[in-house]
Length: 175
Image 1 (tube, helix red, strand yellow):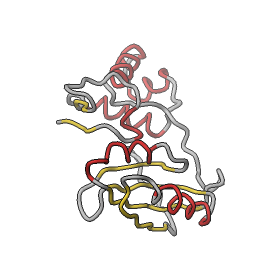
Image 2 (cartoon, helix red, strand yellow):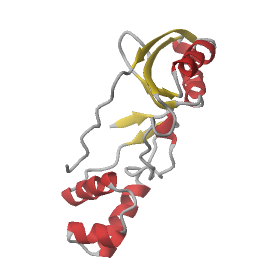
Image 3 (tube, rainbow, N blue to C red):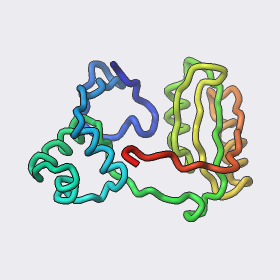
């Protein structure tokens, strides 16, 4: 199984195997302990190896070796702060769909990923080519981003903006 790279999170360092440029091979099968490690670190990425080992009833050396293997194979891509966007001044959220000239998708994806406020980009099949999660200070800032930056980009045919009224917190693994 392969995952096509080229969007923001796919470019994170991690030492994954690749068969051709821009294609990563998905890591081998994970066992129950690996899944439990991922659940614990998803809940709290700052967890110490000692605490992780105690929670999973494994040795610290085993916990460290497993976390290092998960990191080296690209399963763990990094550690980030879980920031509340509203508290950080980003009170407007939207999904923006983009139709683009197919021959230019790589260039457009690279330019889109560099825009401020773009949280996630996915190349999709269906009635549009790309869907993005975007956060902005307010509706005016979102409008400038969509109308001036995205729609003015070479290769972009059209966009549709879906304003988010409310977001539900997703369930976290193991909760």
